[in-house]
Length: 124
Image 1 (cartoon, rainbow, N blue to C red):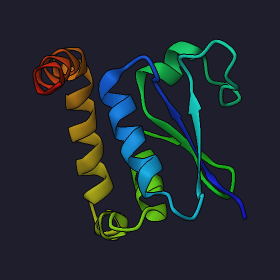
Image 2: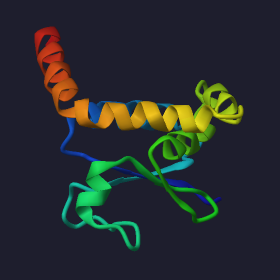
Image 3: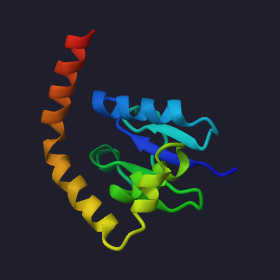
Image 4: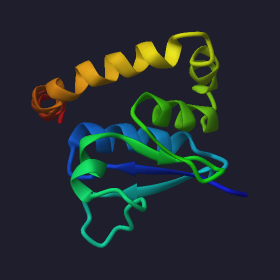
């Protein structure tokens, strides 16, 4: 069975937590996880490490490289309990709106990561 490959920033605590959640839900082994922060990792062809770290990427089961909102939708299609989000993404304009939200999130990511780390440290 072909897998969806997720390329994620393993140096980002927020990203690691999200990917950890996906890994726990992936009962069927549908996902292949690649930490692009690891210098030994195989990057998607034609993608620099900086590009791979800057945006969430996934390679679909049919070999297409997608990023941003489309990458999240590919992951959601493979995860029980999340497939409904992939169905919503099929609605007209949904991917566009999700991509706008993702692009707004990206510049805020460093501050969100700092807040995430602070909150998770308090819980430990």
